[in-house]
Image (cartoon, rainbow, N blue to C red; front, side):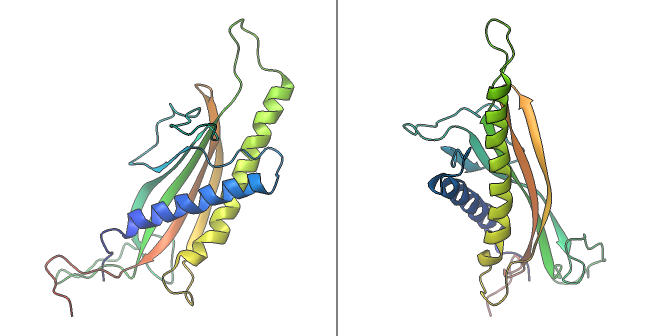
Length: 200
């Protein structure tokens, strides 16, 4: 059966919540360099803009930065070949969706990094090292959050959510921002109805 209308968006929101909670937990655990979940954390349509890495978004004293989750692509797959795309020809009669729908999500976390100052001086090695530590802590926290959280997002506790972690890339600096991009592909079983199909 096809996906329910909110299946993809609900997954993106759940992933955002998992990552945000893990970033805050790292601060609570006293991890050196942990900066917490940014005040600006949201699911976005398409590739996120890089203009808010220092945003507090109305949070008094909250962690700066920007955390986003966006959908990169949605494609058919099969239980035995996930996460490969299923290119099987589907039937022309009725609604015959693939057994699994794969959703590729992109988690992007941006922080401010030191840049050349008003006098043209480059940031010190100490400043760069501190910024690098924060990004590296963010990177491992995001990776671990997805690894630990995604299996539990399944509606059936006896059947954990299937997923494949993709490459994580350190991105930037650009416009005073740098951070990471983590890709993950998640399998969604069909549980909705075709348009016009009546409930059983």
